[in-house]
Image (tube, rainbow, N blue to C red; front, side):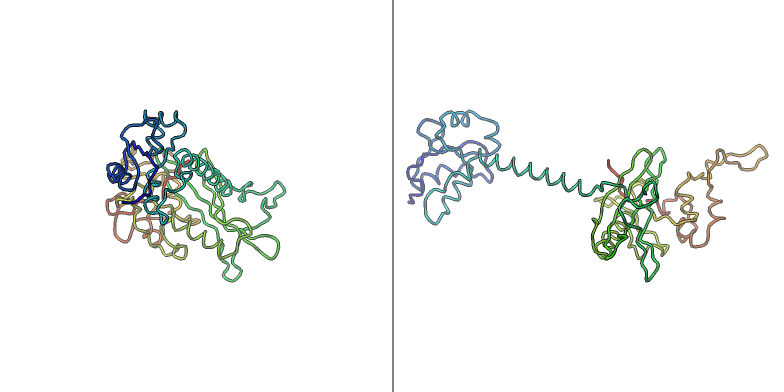
Length: 332
């Protein structure tokens, strides 16, 4: 029989994991200590859980009143039994009061770190707007690859939830006006009534960092690689964690193609055949201005654009086999 707990008179209370609470009396007694089911003046250690300690149960309150009783976690008992010295471990790291204080400080530090991290994501100025004299507020200009002429800028669009409203991301890499050039990547989200700018790659970043964060954001919102943006192939519908297809206002964003009929469609409500009202002369008429009919889209679009909007077959938009529009809805 060991003597690890010689001189220790323990008591325990609370619900311990894996049924360990039932083993405490035997472990204490088999290793030279004494054990009591109830608290009394002769108890030196009360072994309990954080939950029970916070509830201030009668046993915990009595131990606190006695002051000299050390209220420790189950880990103290276990670590003492495993100790090479075969002696009780120092109680200080195992005192429930100290453990809870340390957790409080740690959580406070984590909240502070999260706040600082969020602040670092928000630039002090909007890099997408200029000063009154037209100069950049961040002393940088939109980056254009000098070798390829490629502009690292993308406007991403998506129809928001009803009532119809367009959500937009403006994604851009900036290059400093001064040499040696450094780079930064920003994204600006906007919809009616709200606008927000976040930093993806902070100022003074290397070009590979700026382009990598640009491509990563593009893919998470559009569902395809930046290099594949103009291949005319729609990505698979966006799904949730259970593989259910998300509605269009929670689906992928689409890259704005300047002058594209597809962009016109995204920016304006579409009048389906069922919404076309017959005119007085028997011909179809469309009520309201700015309504784009499906037939108009077909007649105005190129073969490539028709394939992007309707798919490869003769699908009507809204058909169960057609492509639905659009990424994750933006939470304020």
